[in-house]
Length: 136
Length: 173
Image (cartoon, rainbow over all chains, first blue to last red; front, side, top):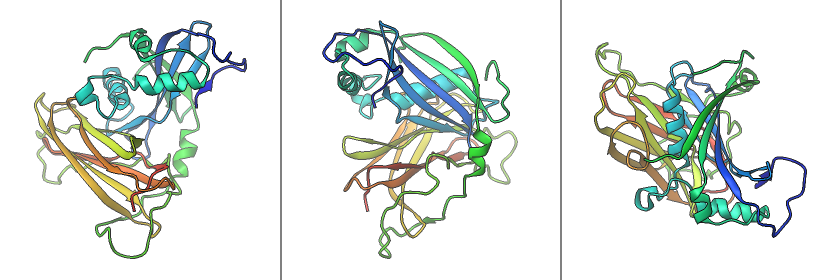
């Protein structure tokens, strides 16, 4: 970490604006028949590359994958990504940590810039039966 | 909570989840006494795959009693502590406040889970910064050990769930 999605080197010191933050939520049935989700938060760069800035977070729910709503899944991702001190800071993401990890990858940015970019969530349902599904 | 989400995409990817699930073993019994023996904190051999979900619906609970969904995040290291959070979703329950309690456990080399700390909060369903219970304890070392939480929601028939077991560079023993 951080992990750049393609093999091209990142030019250290070059200003590479972040155009979007994207949370990838990988859903699957947990061993207890609830749902578990691993989250990877990526910074999408204006040259098309993607830098992973967080992959430590995730959540577990007693809701089954069949009963879990999109609102529930996305809400859980947002809650799991909150900083520990969000109750006092009202910050929705660990922007300072993300900026630090981006700088380690040679992407020059700061907290203010990261706060201003769009944020979206992509849900990926991982099924054991190898059948894709359209929704949850 | 204000979101700047422009869209939510849903994709589907087939995986080897069944294979992973088949490798998961049952969790060891929890130990109530955190002071006995010379056992020390230890990594858990089935970490990352051993999420265990349980429901504590009482046998005599009336069908009319609501059953909430129990949610908790993966334990994580933050500012020198290991921490976790628990919250709930309505499912069949009313949109009212209830108590969410979260217990933090560390795994020891004698194959026991030992209670380390408890957090509790009276919250609405749905999660978010204002509606989650938190628990944390300081890391006294960075040698890896396994952690998980148990989240208990009181409303209706009540429900509980263990969160995913993770080996983290933190120990408190």
